[in-house]
Image (cartoon, rainbow, N blue to C red; front, side, top):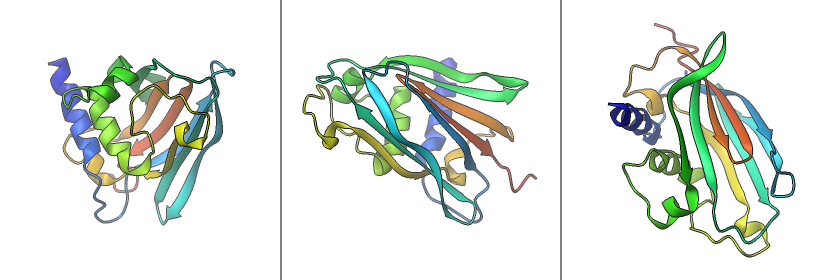
Length: 178
C-alpha cells in the first residue's frame, strides 16, 4: 500500500506539460549546508519566468572530491500547524541508484522530472575538480500536470532533500481553487 502511494505521487511529477494558467508553483527555497567542508550553495533561489511561472535554480558546489557514496533523504511535508511528514520519507544511496536506475524506486520519478533541468546525469565517482561535477538545477518550474493524476489536497507543501538541506516550498492549486 505504501509503495503504491509513492508510485502514484511520483507518477504525477513526470508530466511536464503546461496547460492553461499555472495554479501550482514554488513559493520559497531554503538551502542550508550541514557540512561546510563538503558542499556549498552559491545559488539557491527562485526566479520568475513569466506570469505565475516561478522556477527554481540551485547550484551545489562539491568541495571534497572524489565522492564515492552519497546518501540522500527525500521527504514531503504538508503544512498544518507547521510542516508535518506527508506521503513519504526515504533515504537512498544516490550513487547506487545512478549506476542501477530502477523505475520502481521513488528517486527515479524525481530524477526523471528534474533531468531536463539538471546536469546530474552520471554515476559516482565524482572525481574531477571542475564545474562539470557540480550539480546544477536551472529553471525548474512546477506545472499543473505534475499534480493532475492524484487528488492532492489544496495545500502548502515542502519537499526536503537532506544531504545538505534543500527545502523547496510549493503550493498546489493556489489560483484556481474549485
